[in-house]
Image 1 (cartoon, rainbow, N blue to C red):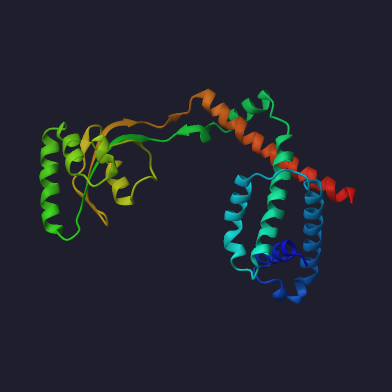
Image 2: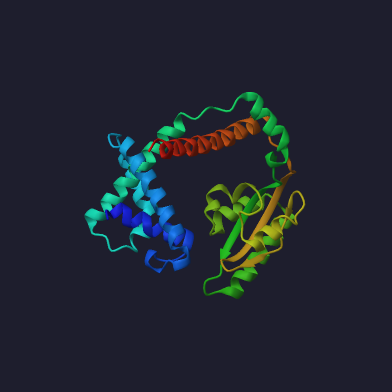
Amino acid sequence: MRPWERFARRRLALTRWHCEPENIPASHQQAFDRAWARQRQLELAVVAIARDASVTDELRNAVAASLAPQLDECPFSSAERQAVIAHHARLETQFAEVARTAPLPDEASVLRWYQQHQAQFMRPEQRLTSHLLLTTEQNHAGIRTQITRFYQQIRDHRAAFPRLAARHSHCPSALEGGRLGWVSRGLLFPELENALFALQTDEVSQPVETTLGWHLLWCEQIRQPALMAKADALAKAREYLFRQSQQQWQRQWLASLLQAR
């Protein structure tokens, strides 16, 4: 059995039966054998078509990286490992070529899908945020006192925030006077997100402690949720429908290979 066959057979068993091929239960052996015969037939057919295709170094490296965790579990020699990578690179090259020929969605379909799924094109609530971080290291009490003093200065004079952040903050945003830009939910530590999204416009948080240290957050502006611009939404809808078309096109092409053999 060639290296790519051993690799593919093992991956099929692990993916669908969650065990090594030799440990497939007897009651599932026929189903496994049928699935493996079908997959082997398809891969042979695809590689035969792609035999003369040019494989770029970029694609080969990407395939090698994606397969590395599973290849590391197999007792392959260096040459066998490279053979598996080359086989999968040829598969990917042919799949990409088939996907390239998939029909583009027509504009009526794009508009209809957009209208039916407008809720997916909402821009989330965002806050224009500045951040100041003091890491505690060995001086927890001293840093707590310092961040409290900074909070009092900024509470009274917002203009102090960029100056203090640029001079004292341990966050990379210090280079921008603490400015993080527009922040949505899901981007910050939970403690910081909770503090930030509880603030009103132009409000500064009380000092917030995390495992990194002590933080201050300034919510300069609030951008409420809103529908994405229609042109941008249509572009995303068109991209999504084209990916769906490509996947369907590939499935049809693979089915035609089986029918032809």
